[in-house]
Image 1 (tube, rainbow, N blue to C red):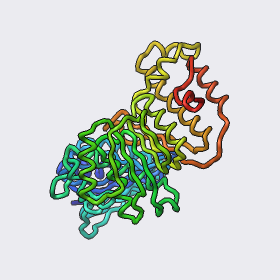
Image 2 (cartoon, helix red, strand yellow):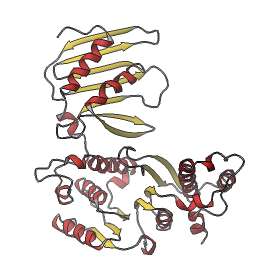
Image 3 (cartoon, helix red, strand yellow):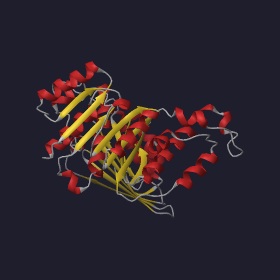
Image 4 (cartoon, one colour):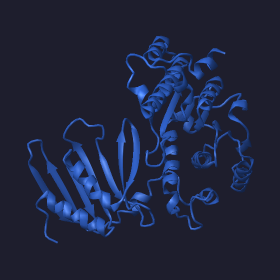
Length: 382
């Protein structure tokens, strides 16, 4: 293969490798301008994956991984190569470095390299190994410890959640025996993931209480936990609204519907939770209270815009109310919208510093014609 001399030559190489599902790694770095994604890495996934490649980036201190098909890769490269001063393309036997400046000058440096397994190194990055026995018990992997093709997105979501929690915990809490509560734990994927992660690091939870309304699933999860000697992991059939929590260090509530998210947040604060991780689902309560104002006539003519606006306002007020009660709050994308539209995460960390933002909340409610109280407001007033 002759040395590439132009960007078109590089693109031809990428297209050929992608068509053959060959291994490669692409790193975009040193952006031309001030863009949110400072560095993007494209890596090769195992052949068993539904999509051969994936790109990884960090934005606002959060790490994201998004799979792409081999057919999409060339367009992805074309759209981003013009945004960065340095682009490194590694194949199993060659490396190609693209150097660009703002004046339009492009230099390409190519060289041979020793054979590299570009898939193997990438598979080792997950915090939760595909070999974990509970993943097989829950139907995520095969007996051989391979992630099932249809469960690749769930496996990435599991690892993403553990990554978020592990990077949020303060150093002293990473080695402590914490009490955790998972309200609306579903099939227990994230509960098992977090328990096994903490146990492997010599900080097995003091207690991990998981609650959901389906008795058969809770029974199954308890059997799996017992078989693995996860002695402090317990699954209970119950309703979020009726669940009493005396104390918890960590509260998890993913996809609790509508006001159940507010109930979970309220219970977390009252139980003294140091950390709250909530991914809201369905924002009906505030939407019913919204009325047309002179600033929002067009929004109220469009159902989808009204729905999205209600989601944003609902979670904004939730964040502000948590700040009132001594938490720092950030809201970010939890998983890609390709996998679920319920993709926002509210993360709250207890600091004890309360912020009086009542005026901000009232201004927001007036602006969007909200006639009445946010459900979480009423809970805190009760």
